[in-house]
Amino acid sequence: MQISFDTTDALLIIDVQVDFCPGGNLPIEDGHEVVKIINPLIHLAQKNGAHIFLSRDFHPRLHPSFKENGGQWPTHCVQDTPGAKFHPELIIPDNLVIVSKGTRFDKDQYSAFDDTGLHVVLKKLNIKRIFIAGLALDVCVKETALDSVTYGFKTFLIKDGTRAVTQESGDKAISLMQQKGIEVI
Ligand code: VGL
Ligand code: ZN
Image (cartoon, rainbow, N blue to C red; front, side, top):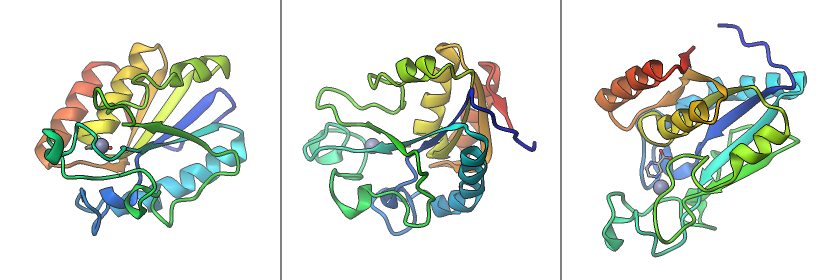
């Protein structure tokens, strides 16, 4: 689908960070491949006046999601380390808005909507449609897209612009999202 953005659209790019790409601390197979899909979309969104949000997983040291603290994941995306940076080739839009998540000590936040207040600013901007891509499809992209529909936004998943931790859970995530009314494009 050729996307034609307008000013009531938001492009929400999830966690395209060094640690989620090959060579990082929680690498997703071919994670870096999303950049060449996402960059033209950022470019087009900028040109058409759509709003662009980049989320980042931004954990403090001692975060409960790390194995060493009883969690499930290797240590990753630690605040102010190279692994937490956006992929070096990702276009950083002029009107950059960053959504930092995973910053709490009491729980993980997979969704960019989870206790970030993101829905408030999107409603204020009169956003109607949200286009989502990034990493990882079966974790943070999925949870973000599910919250997006729950908040009443028409939600699109840009499938080529995502990669999953595992193929199987990626496929499951896609079916669930479709069931919930997310349009996979
Ligand atoms: C993510 C695992 C742990 C993600 C974040 O961004 O998908 N996955 N933290
Ligand atoms: Zn994380």
